[in-house]
Structures are given as C-alpha cells and as structure tokens.
Image 1: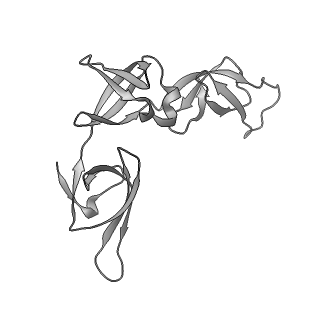
Image 2: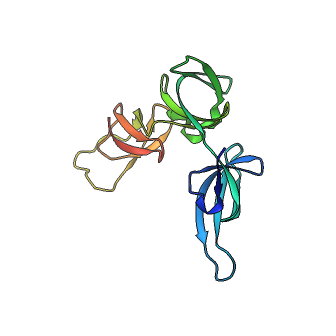
Image 3: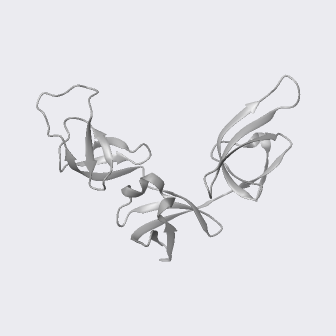
Length: 187
C-alpha cells in the first residue's frame, strides 16, 4: 500500500492507522506560531463508526488504502442479511442489512448498488443518488394552493415519510434523493 505524508491527507481518503481502517472526514492544516505545521484530521472508523481526532506532522507517514468498488445487484433479504450478485461473475455475497443504515428502505428488488471492498470485506454500500418511489398517503391536492415554500408530509410505498410540494397527490411517482432523503421531482 502507498504511504503518504501527513500533509497530503485529504477528506475522503481511507487510511490504515493503529491497525484500523479510517475515512478522513475533515482535514484542517494548522501552522502555529511556534513549532512545525501539522494536519488536524477528523477520522471515522469504517468498521464500527467511532470517531477519532489525530494530528499528523508533515514528516509522519500514513498508509493510504484504496478500496475496490464493485457494482452488485440486490436479489433478496433473508435473516437480516441482504443478498447481492456480482453482475459480471454471478457470484453472490451476503451483507448485513445495517450496512445501508437509514437508507435501507430505498433498496428495491433488482437495484444495482456500489459496494466498496477492502480485500474481501465489504465496508460501505452506496445506493443510486435518485430513486423512484410511489406516494401512498398524503393530503389531497388543493386548487389554488401555490405558495412557494409550503410542503406537506407524505408517506411513501416503503414506509418513509418525506415532505412534498402541495401539488403532488396520492398514487403519484416521485423521485427521492437518497443522500438527503428529500423530494427531488415528479417521476
């Protein structure tokens, strides 16, 4: 694995530090009046989610890890495990359902997601940025209600509540941004 200097760490880098894998969340380069410059790095553990603040001087060497990204197709869920298939090799893998966190309800049958692997261990899974969902329940459309910033609550077919504009009614398909978990547009 390539080693980088402490002042080369950037947000989004995956580092091996103290025997664990960490993602650099926030990096501040500090030049105090006395002493040498350093990088103050806020890191998140990729396995258990704990956070750590660490100082790296420019002379410190850190292992930078490259994660392998593979597209996986969702097949089904069984006993708290999500079963995915590699579209190229047809190899199936099981991942814990909590790997997706609060975005789990947006996972749909046959959906292709990106899974990041370190060696053979899956560390992170990303859904497509936009997903089409159907509104199951919301207040009816009121004619003439066109206030620019008024939104109303709606329940989607996957059970998630989102705020939608007043012109959107029940049984309509909408596009939801999975990163912000907000209404994006009509489908």
